[in-house]
Image 1: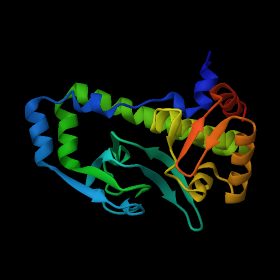
Image 2: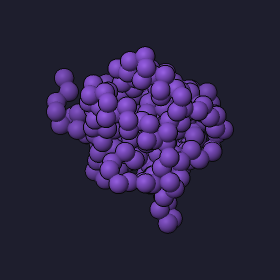
Image 3: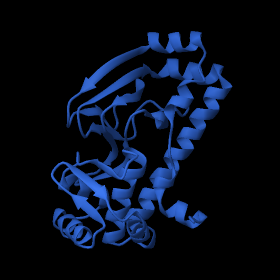
Image 4: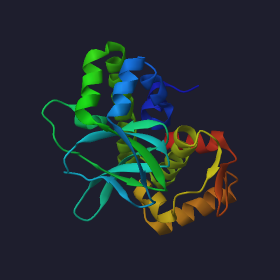
Length: 233
């Protein structure tokens, strides 16, 4: 049984359902939102939002896979990975803000709905149930980010990679066998390790019967043991 400390240490315990949020809008509000929305396709590797750029919209991720990250001088810090359907850019909504405080990039070909930010704020101000759900989404995203910081600063290399794999399985793809859409370099970036360390630990996990890895997919074979490695760090 997972304890409260287990939940804090493993951000995959959080699961967001953005569709529940959108369902709280009435017909008029949905029509209003659609009138202020455009659909945009981004190719793999394209930047959706740029840290420091003017925040003109929030995004609903319809298809694809993206990462949000803080840009550094020599390296980037990944905050979260988002899969459909999720709202991206909620952190831009606080009063007086005018810019994106992180960048967003597509891991694979991606489709998003761009919603004009002031119109989105109007929906929040007029619909209390919608506003409450938005606060809940922000809280969940904050917990996920806190979990990543714990993983990167407190866990050893085996625990960090186990945590990343579990997050991909449990929160992103929602299945124990999922497509291998990230490169070794991207796994390294997520877990704060070198590519060589990623290759070595993945080989070890495979040899120990924890994972099956091919060029097309990753499958968790021993969820209990992998979870224990993640939790113990």
